[in-house]
Each structure stands twice: as structure tokens, then as C-alpha cells.
Amino acid sequence: MAELRPPIESGAPDPMPYMHPVMVKNYGKWAFHSHPKPGVLYHRADSGDEIWTVKAGTARQLDHYTVRELADIADQYADGFVRFTARSNIEYMVADGSKVEPLIKALNDKGYPIGGTANSVSMIAHTQGFLHCDIPGTDASGVVKALMDELYDDFVKCEMPNRVKLSTSCCEINCGGQADIAIIVQHTKPPKINHDLVANVCERPSVVARCPVAAIRPALVNGKPSLEVDEKKCICCGACFPPCPPMQINDPEHSKIAIWVGGKNSNARSKPTFHKLVASGLPNHAPRWPEVAEVVKKILATYKADGKPWERMNDWIERIGWPAFFEKTGLPFTKYHIDNWRGSRANLNASAHIRF
Image (cartoon, rainbow, N blue to C red; front, side, top):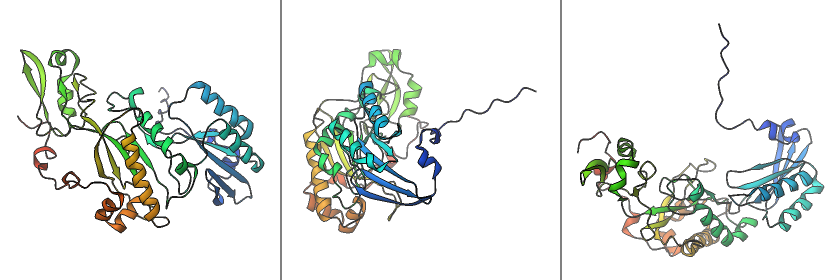
């Protein structure tokens, strides 16, 4: 009998080969961790070994010259051991405490800010944007660059009540995930269909099945197989666009940006929560998105002034209540902020198998 081949493993790779030897030696055997300054973490093992982590912010899209520059700094100060985080930061592991300050100076001299730890504003987690994704409504990397330029001081200083995590998503599928403040593209009109191209480009059954609220159905238009959208059901999510580019939903006038707050994945001190809409219809004004930056800074300033120590944003809002949140931030409250699920039977309780 032939030998069975080992299965192909999927998921995250084994981190041990890429981890600093001090971390491998003391894995799971740490006496304590501390935070001596913004962007720097100190770890002491039960064995007495010490190691420092220095976190620097980088751009989401890196050219190979920048990667080489960062790697050269790692070779000089951190024994060549680095790791990139999910929020586009780079972390250097340093076993020699005398190299910490020279490492920080070398990074600052090259323009990389040190911060993003403890009660600071973290780097923004974001989706792929125009570079890789097939359905973006805006340039996610551009939004991150514009916002972090505005929030630089909040990244390098630890002056918030607690950690603030931000995310951006360039469509309403929200791959950026839950966050204290989430910036999400908001389509406000159903897709425009180019009926001349649908039959040649789109696999119509797949497009019908892709719609989460069964708002798309096959149709004949001018004698050609095509699709049509029930605009009363359509929630303008954009899920139909990837399998059928002739169903264009991006629009320079009707693709807006919305701000959501209060999302949290961790269960530390309070339960995980979903973020909730607080501002919608903001202009999608590249390349700096000034209206979005204004709202985000207003929310952060209010939270910084009014939040208690160790309160995450959702805890702060729960303590003061939503009416006080809108009053303190000065954001307008409209009927669109009230979710009464009216019409849910017509859209959410639907299936692609229903008969039209």
C-alpha cells in the first residue's frame, strides 16, 4: 500500500522559526510585561531574560526599497528579527536594552513614527482598496494615509482613556471589521446595469445567488438575457458587482462614506460589541477626505475629554447614553439612526429560492 501523503496545512504559519531566540526560549514563561514609553514594550521572563519590543508605523503598501530599509535597521539594532502586525505596524525585538534608544532614533530619522501602544490611537486596519480588491468604492489606503496624518500626535502619545482602534472598509461588506471608529463606504443607489454586456460577462445564476436579500432576478432586455434589480429590496451593498462588473454600483456622486463607532472584538472588561452608525452621507472626497477627518477628530476629542481611565469607546457611550453622545460630539441625529427593522420581512427574510 502506498504511503499517504501528509495533509497540506492551512492557516497561520508556525511563528517559531521567525521569533527572536529569547522569545522562543521563554515562550509562555514571562514574569511580567511593562510599558516604559509610547511604542516600547518591556518583557521579563521567569529566567531573568529581558527583551524589548519597539513598534513603528509604516505605510500599508511598501515598495521593496522601503522593505530593505526597514530590514537593514533590523539587522543593525534588532538581530534581524521583526514582525508586521495586522495594522501595518512593524515591531522590532531587541534583546540588548542599550540598542532601544538608537533604534528609535534610526526609525525617527527615516520618518517612521514610534507609537501605537497602550492608550493611544492605533494604526488603522483597512481593506485592500483599489490595489487588489474588485469592488472598492474608495481608496482605503488613501483614507488611512490622510487620517493618520491628522492623528499623528494621538499615535505617538498615550493620552486616550484607553486604546482606540480604527478601521476602514472600501465597501459595505466591511472587511475592515469592528472597531472603536470604523470608516465604511456607503453606496446610496442601486447598481446601474449595462444590459448589452451582462450576457457575455456575467454568470447570471451566480449573480442571483450572491444577492443577500434576493433583489436580483433574471430578465430579458431587448431580446438579450440580462438581469434586473428590485430596488425596493436592494440594500446597495455592492455584492453583485464582483461576479458581474456590468452592474456598476460605484458612483462619484452617490457613493458616500459613513462613520460607525463602538465596535469591539475583545472581551476584556466588557463584552464584544457591534459598532453603530453615527454619521452618514459624508462626501467621498479624495485624496484627503477632509469631512471624514473632521468627524473622526471630533469624536476622538470628545472621548478623550469625557472618557474615564480604561474606558473603551463603547463603554464610554454606554455610560453616558446615545443622546449624550450626539449632544457632546455635535453630530446631527436623524431618523436614519433609528433601526426599527421596518420592512425587514421584505428584504432580510428573503431567499434566492423564492419565486418571482
